[in-house]
Image 1 (cartoon, helix red, strand yellow):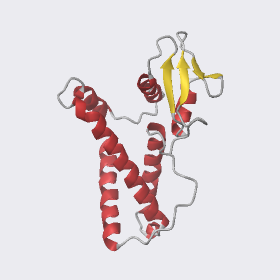
Image 2: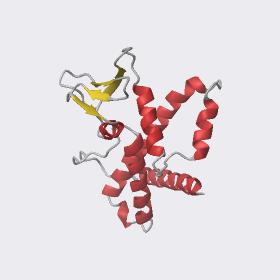
Image 3: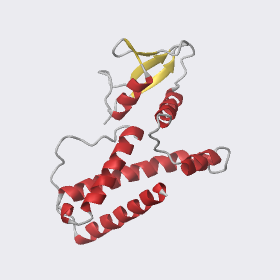
Image 4: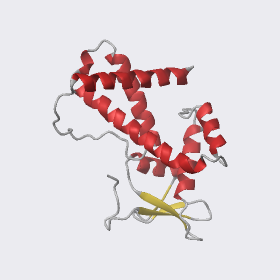
Length: 186
């Protein structure tokens, strides 16, 4: 659940013409790096143009992604960026936001299932170290790209042990993710 102000609403960040960002919750000026950190910490905020009053949150989040990608630690493959750009003006453009959101939700769910599987003893598998490394890579990517994706530090509630079918399904999902990661490396 996203962290909000005491009145339950998102924190309002005002962007002034001089490109400065002002956090109305803390009454201080902040940077894009601060907004990226707030996003990773699942803090709910909206960015408002101080002059026009327009909500420019989307533009600012996109700017953060561009800056993150320009640091040399790129997460978005060129082929993905080309595909994304090709969707603008395409008849599929209207469907893309909901598709990407559903894909990220599925990614988070799969990541959580993998974490649960590791906690239940899948570590004994000889492939566990490789899968664990890949999971850490996915977690790092998710923390940068998705608000609220940082794993909880609280202990998850007790659940029943996974059935053989569930473990087989998780292994198939891990194999599919490994294949996609291998394809990204090529």
